[in-house]
Each structure stands twice: as C-alpha cells, then as structure tokens.
Length: 154
Image (tube, rainbow, N blue to C red; front, side, top):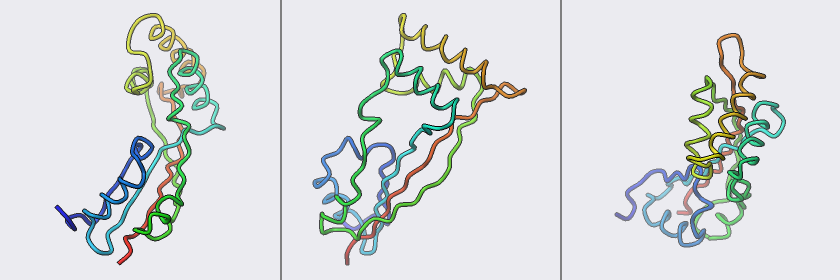
C-alpha cells in the first residue's frame, strides 16, 4: 500500500538489493516525511576476541565478501527521493557463553553447518573462548552499529 509506513528499515541487508529500485519502492510505501534507515553491525577490527572470531570463521572458509562490502550513502541522495543521509554510530556488544559463541557463528549463512569445517570452527572458537572468557565464562563480541538515516523529500 502506498504511503502506509512511517519508517522503512533495512538491517544487515541493503547490499542484497538493487539500490535504485529498492529506494523507489521504499519511497512509494513511505508517508510524506517518512524515514529510511539502513543499518549494519560491523565487527571490531581492534578487539582481540572479535578479531579472533572473525579469523576463525575465515580460517574455515566462512567469511563472505558480502560481509566486507561498503555502503555508499550517497546512493540515497542521488536517487532524488531522499535527503542526504545522516550517519550515526553506536557501540554494540554481544555477551555470550561458549554455546552462544558457537551458536552465533553457526547461525551465520556463510558459516559451514556440518562436517570437518564445522568441527574445526568449533575447536577454534573453543580455544578463543578459553583465552578470553571472564570468570563467569562470558566473552563479548564487539561491534559498531552504523545507522544511516534519511527523510523522504516532500
């Protein structure tokens, strides 16, 4: 339905879409002065645990090039449908026990789900957890949440 939504949010997904047709559709369904938000959680490249987690996934062939794709915020304004984007950044942490750490990795579409690669990933994550877990058996993956927001042009 046209002009039905106050907000359209794309979380961890905009890179899968063809930008211009997606923006046209977002504008169609947004009310006047509606808001578009495009968001990603980017893993820290400086936190030792988070970098080790990323490396463990890469070591088993699980890292996806899509994960490393950059977002060009100018594509939104160039569409002529939205204002220039405002970028906002927030720290974000995911606290996990060992089962949660392994489950987090296995839930990613780009990680192996069974076989030797999965067994190796579990072993690598187990070693990582042992090095970094606090006394309660918890580790924290560190992210930076990037939010790009724009308003419809009236």
